[in-house]
Image (cartoon, rainbow, N blue to C red; front, side, top):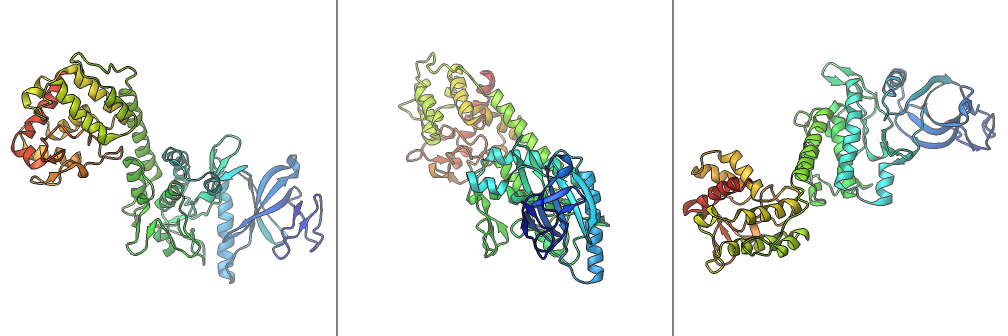
Length: 478
C-alpha cells in the first residue's frame, strides 16, 4: 500500500500510486521515498514507515514536520529546532546504535527527515509479549545503552524521551537501538526545550523536565525508570496512578515489587534521585559502577568455584547434609547444620558451644570444607573467609578493640547496639543478606534456643571467639 502524507487526508492507496486518489497529493517524496504506513505522532509531527525506491525498496522512516505551536514566532523557532535536529542526527547517526539520517528536504511546503529503519521489537512490546525482565537482562540493557547516551551527551544532545517504546531490539542481531530523538542545545548552565511544549513522557521524565529544564542526567533518570518498569512489569496507568511511585512521599517504591542485587539496587537508586545535583552525573559513571560490579562478581565466581569438595573429613564428620541444604538454598537450615558439624568436629556436641581453644585447634580440613561449601553455593557472598576479610578491613590488628568489633557486627547485620540481642528472626536467611551475614550461628552461645546475644558476645568472650577464628583461618590458609 501507499500512504498519503497530506495531514488532512492520510488515505491508504494501492501500491505504485503516483497521486493520492482522494486528495491528489504527490505520493513520492524527493522522487524516491514512498510512505507505506503511519507509525505515530509526536510534538514535532508524524512518523511513517517507508521504502526507498532508488534502493530496491529498502525500508526507511519518514518524519514529517507538523508542529503543534501557533504564532509566527513559535513556528519560526520550531522550524529552526527541526532543522537543527536534522544536522545533529546526521552526526549522531555515525553511532552504530542510532538510526542514520538519510535525507532532509522540503516538499509541498513541508519539511521531512528520512531516517534508517530498524526492523525489530521495542522493549515495551517485548515486555508485553514475554513478561518481566530478569536482573541480568536489565543489566544488559544498561550496558548497551549507557555508551549511546554518553555519546549523544558528548555531542551536546539530550534525548529527553527515554522509555521502553524508544528502545528497539534489532531482529537481525539483537542489538539495542535508541530512536525518536528530542534535541536541545546547551546554553549557559541550562538547556533549551521545545518552544511551547513540555518534553518527556509522564511516568518516565524527571521532575525538572516538567519545569522546562533538562540536563544530561535527566536521560539517566528516565533510563532508570525504564529499567524498574521492565524489572517489575508495572507501568503508569492511564489515570496517572503508579504502583512504583508513592506520590504522598514523592518516592519510588519499586524495591517492594522485585528483588535484585544490592549493587544494581544502589545504581538504580542513584539514577532515580529527585534532584539533578544528587543524581549520578554521567552515563560513564553508571557504566563504570556496573562494570566494577560485573568484574567483582566474575572474580568471586572464579575464585570460589570449587569443582571437587571432599565431604567426609578425617574427623569422620559427614558434610553431605550441609551440601544438600546449601545447594537447595535452605540458608537457615544450613546455618544450623553448620553449628552441628562444627560441634561434632570438636567433640562439643554435649556442651553445645565452642571454647576459644576449640576454635584455635579446629581441624583445618573441616574448616576448609565448611567454608568451600558456603562460598560455592553463595557465589562468594557467604562464608568464614568472607567474614575474615571484612573483619580485617574494619578491625585490622586491633583485635581487642570492642568498638571495631561492634562495627564488624553492624556491617554483617548481626548487631543493632552494644546491649542489643539479635535472635533467629533478626537474621536474614536468604541470598540478599549483607555480605558475610552467614553463617552466623556459632559466634555466640544459645540463650533459650538458637538466639544470638551480642551483649554477651562483646562482654564475655565472644570477641575472642571471632579473633580466634580469624587467626585459625589464616593458619588454615583461608
